[in-house]
Length: 316
Image 1 (cartoon, rainbow, N blue to C red):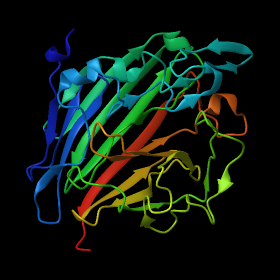
Image 2 (cartoon, rainbow, N blue to C red; image 1 turned 45 degrees about the horizontal axis):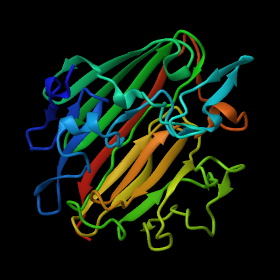
Image 3 (cartoon, rainbow, N blue to C red; image 1 turned 60 degrees about the vertical axis):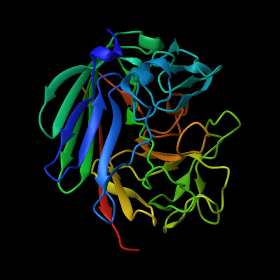
Image 4 (tube, rainbow, N blue to C red; image 1 turned 180 degrees about the horizontal axis):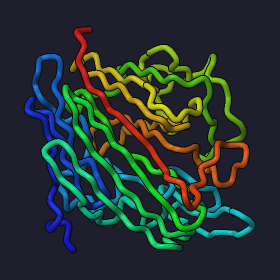
């Protein structure tokens, strides 16, 4: 099936707020929300057209699975059995392997004016992961400008599962991100090694460039950028975990989630507009770290990841 046969599916509100989602990779292709003047603009940095996503693996806007982020050594041991994964970032596994969920055509289950449900069936042994996994992704727009994404999954054998949406956000119509104001409700973060894998135990954000407990300028203290997981308090309730504000456009993004981790990634490559990624997920390399929150989904359980991106505007 060609990507041409899978056009972007639009969901929208009467106000003009709308999102375009591709069945290929369950990918957020664009998201139109107003600035402080009421002018609609796309706050996602995607690829130029739907065909580009198949030609170029960029993770932009895609659904990531079976396991977001990195797994050291592209493998893990579970219930006494060693599982070898696709080492697409040798020697490690990144974002589910070479043929992750971002590379699949998802089935359209339902499509309404303001909501869309996609489904994916991942067979036992897919990219080395055990068990057959059944996944559904709901995309829902609600007034005035909130996009909710809900991932649900069941599995036939115990398997680590961490799904997320990898949106690349730019709130200033493609402009610089350095002066964005960011707040993250996290007391700790995971330091990383040269392979961007967790290095040791969580560390306090206090006194570091990772302290976003109060809103501060995003890249003033760390011009090299971020690719780090922030550790959140475990909960089964949806709660606000981060706020991103662009003084230029007046757009503000409030992120809510029920996950234990939030990956902050800043992208300033020369081939596209700069972007900020805020990805609710399990902690990276959790399958190999018994000291990390459990990320194993077992038969009879339902995996759930609820994400809300609520947009509004401010005058200053």
